[in-house]
Amino acid sequence: MFGHKKSPASRAPERDKLGIYIHIPFCRSKCDYCDFYSLAGREDRMDDYQKALLAHLAETAPLAKGIPVDTVYFGGGTPSFYGDKRLRELLAAIEKLFELEKGAEITLEANPDSVDFKALKRLRKAGFNRLSLGMQSACPAELEAVHRPHSPRQTDEAVEAAKKAKFKNLSLDLIYGLPGQTMEEWKASVEHALSLIPQHLSCYGLKVEEGTPLQKRVEAGEVLPDDDQQADMYLWTVGRLERAGYPQYEISNFAKPGFASRHNLRYWQLKPYIGFGPGAHSDFGGRRYSWVRDLDGYIDGVLKGGTILDSEELIPQRERGYEYLMLRLRTVEGVEEWEYRSAYFMDFAPLEARLEEFKAQGWAEKTEEGRWRLTPRGFLISNQLIGDLLERQERAGFQDLLPRAREQFSRPRDQGPAS
Image (cartoon, rainbow, N blue to C red; front, side, top):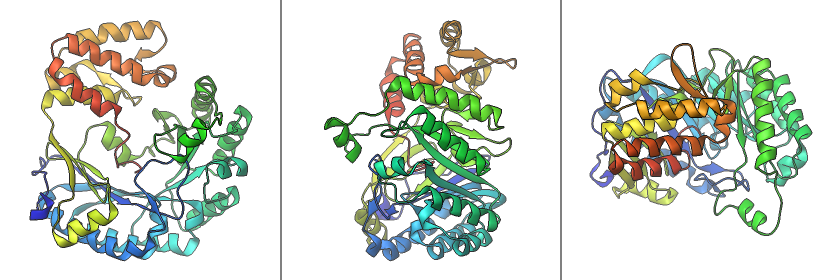
């Protein structure tokens, strides 16, 4: 498809606003737990990659004509390692080619070792207004254990530089369940993060992904905090951050009021977005599609007219009903009967009956507004609970859609919030 200079997407409805995701696959070094498409030691291709991204943006922009863009997210990899000059050039191209709204949320993912005040000041002046720093831990030994390229001191310095550069929307990422981590050490990392006064916190449980160095270490006998220990860390975190003024709005995300990630909410609310770069996913014009996870293949495909499309599918409206359940139940907003019925023409009664049973177990609750959502304890086993609801829907008469819905639910998170 791309070889003929066409995107697989058709025009999205004009009433929809659009998000743009830019994948920057370059890293200084690869962390042991990471299975996202990222590469160390490929700086030699940065200039060619920049040309490819600019060309791809220019080619795609006409398809989004008339659609306001209200979020832009630069994820990776390590976008800050790419250099602020290239990042500013990309944002300027988006502003020129797309209908970027005034006040759009423009996020940059960064590692603490690859930012400084001067670069952040230039980025802020160029229009970047949200910074997501990969802090991960405040314990040097934990960072070293997974080969993170920065120190806790560099995190503190990066936060200070960001505030000096007038970033007023700062997010910090933390990981619980790291090798050798105890509950007390996790608590210390959270307290340190709170002392830096960010507007947003993302707290992820460590997962051993297939094909990563961490998987090899575990197979060789290394012991990590088990599921029960991770559950204790998670539940403590939900309560502590609530008391600190960071209510939970999604399984792994917490924010001060008004600072939830607008871009990440797109994915959970089934709003359209277009991704650029190897491995990036899109949901636009009623279709979901992705680009090849191959840096050289992506560059050559864009600049020389080859094929870069990796997958493409048209999403029927009723299948969106399954996605609605899977994604909205990741959030504290949850799901609502008439929202579900009117949008997807599907019966909510079998689901509500099961949700009532979950409620009796302390896994779900119904709000005063009539919305169903999972509790923090429910979030811990959300895969099982949502899978159960999909089974109920299957028995309600949509067997043909369930296998694809299961496939979507089991995928790693798209090249979206962070690739």
